[in-house]
Image (cartoon, rainbow, N blue to C red; front, side, top):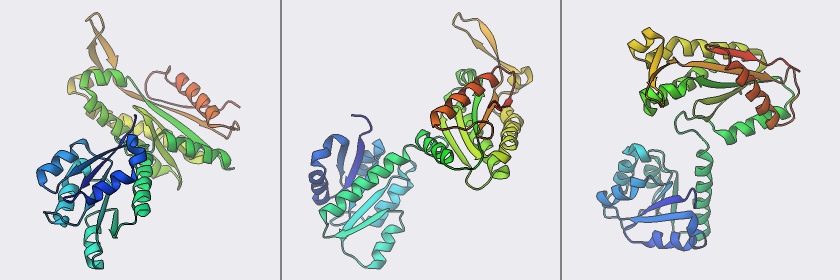
Length: 312
């Protein structure tokens, strides 16, 4: 089954583990539930798979609860993993001490089965929603992009959509590797973010479609300025991602399928702009089709290009 939700339960008594297994019995195909003792080595092993959710039974632990929470949050892979702590009702001061360790929920005992069940289910839903966010850039993904486009279509304001992607990115990846390619993706996202912050309006939107494809939805008045500023920021700094030799040459060399070296241009950026100023759109599909057509035309123009569609 795709996208199984992994839950790690730290429980020296198995009390909470047994209860969660019972509550999710009818949905076990959706969940992978692992139990761990409070021993540091056991916790390390349980957290290797980077779970979607961590639940800790604060009763009967062989180690100090607060130290366990601090230890988990120091792990960069689990620094944002949601946590639920449940324990016999303690003082407000003790609960606050737990929450200060960046714990999302403190559920006092005795446990109410439905309360625990729906807390787990709702957190799982939130985790699924957060998976729509690009891990690389931290920007909203396709689901949020579609929602934002639909929101703009229902408003009466003029807006513009900027479709942005890189030219010759694959050649760069082939020579410099995907990790350097990821840095270029993050750099491109920052160029767009900074341009929108400087010239945009409140409510402007920036999303990451995937790979080297981005989309921005902005007020029409500032759209052209933002699009051209994105290009300037990109052009001013993209050279930092190449070797001195490649920068001096103005191209990179890569072997083709026959093993013969070929020249590939350095990366440039394409910004294709459509708006509802010249054409009324009814659906997200129409926006996407026009955006793809304008971007295709823009990419036939050498170098970094800004192209606005003004066809009615």
